[in-house]
Image: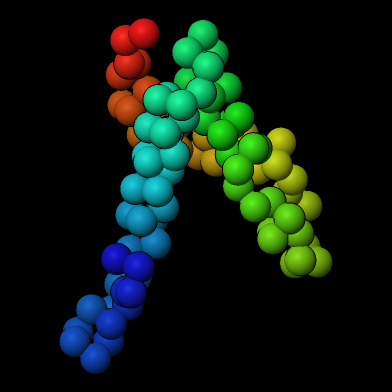
Length: 93
């Protein structure tokens, strides 16, 4: 998926949304397993992105006003429905 599009073999679609959903689902799962078990799924997801996503790499674009706080919350809000599927599972302590 990360190599798409491949027009030389007739694959013109890029699958950008598909790979983004897969990556966010992985982030959600990692947040459930490794973050505070008393926190809400949102707090776990946002906390993981705030702590480990390289937000400073996003700041190089002149129009980018996203920081770790707003960016993490925007990603959760955009993919919230899909993430609830993954956040329903909580490991036993």
